[in-house]
Amino acid sequence: MKSIILIAIGVFELTMNCIAQKKDIVYSSDACIVDSLQVGIKKYESFFKKPVKELKLYALVVENSNEFGIYLQEYSHLTASGLLDLIKTTDRKLLINRTTAISVIVPADKMSLQVKKDNIAYLPLNGYYVKVVYENNKQKVVETAFLF
Image (cartoon, rainbow, N blue to C red; front, side, top):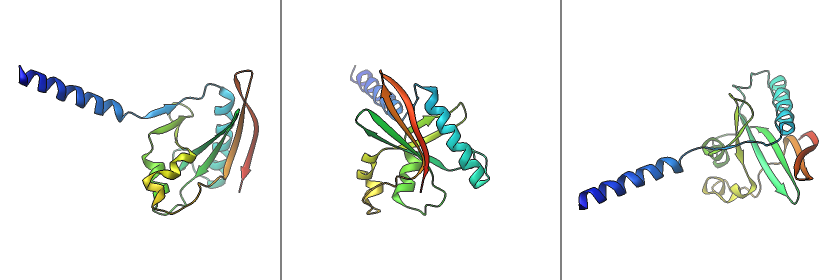
């Protein structure tokens, strides 16, 4: 009887470990956000003269009251660092289409052990910017720009 209970506990723990390591895919509820991000991706493609599969993109999502901003950035210029490690290992992904998912980081990630070892005070807020506001419980893109 004890062996059956131990086996059941082991299977349960193994199952929970597998579920906990599943990627968090962030879906945007409004097509206007994905469309705006696709415009930014196309601009990066033309700027770097590479297809989207070869671009190293990530998104920094900053939320304020009743709005949020997405900073789409390219990270091929980063040297080995905690920020680069964070971008590559995060489980948060923004699904652009069936084949493209972009890593997502948030400002609170600067408290992660990976970024703390870099001794940086803030995450860079540059790149292709998409500002989204909530109007009547719907998301609306109100601004896009390249910030340098």
